[in-house]
Image 1 (cartoon, rainbow, N blue to C red):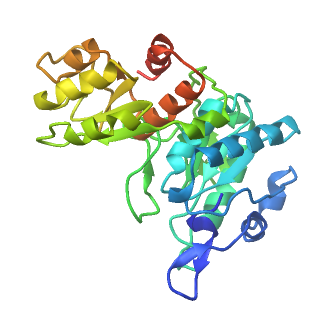
Image 2 (tube, rainbow, N blue to C red):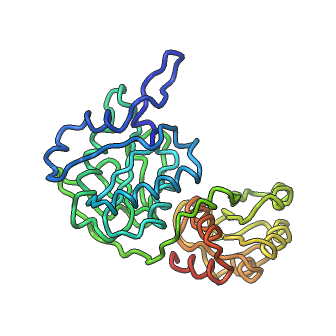
Length: 318
């Protein structure tokens, strides 16, 4: 799909997408020892901030087509800026038990200590491993195997940028051998409907003193909203009327900006607390972080889910 793993320095300065899938595979020794044939194809060549839902729908279609044609697993190379969202999109839209593994690089191929080849090799080993079947889409970076619904990028440049807050990796690649402790899938699969790209689901991060005015101005343009609340799912009292008004008109999901932990349901009772907001019609995101909550809400709306269906879907992640 592009990303740093497929970039090289340009004449005008900075690195840009330059390499195709064949180039990436050719740079990785040991792939011939996997015991399965490896085919490569370039679907997109973009920095990941420029990918959109239309690209993710095309990717999901292609992954499912490859699996239907007999692939034992699929590796997707991708930019790290939005890798966690794409991995979760695939987790929701690819029903097959075959491993779907997303990987990338923090350092481009011309950099000292480039990590792309090692990440691609580890990802291929995981995608070919029988122990990786049936546990959903995965992200493999720095020999760690992360479940798509937990993983987050937490550093701008470190090769150890990817972690799964509160859960940790579900496995490691040791001497090329994937050692995985399985994690149950949620059982939720949604169609990668092209309509997904036509919807506008907002993600608003709440800050100290927020009165909701920016959200008030944007509200009419939204089909759905994720509120990245303070702490365990809280907003300033002055913001409550705006959020409540939107929740009466469109689906609004309550998440947390903290980076780890679940949104609470019944601990706090003040105006703007999680109890107050859930009673006003917001839906809690459970352990899903704001970016992944947005992916799920976008797909649910594209699949014509009603409010009860949306609440039930998010309940799977509590």
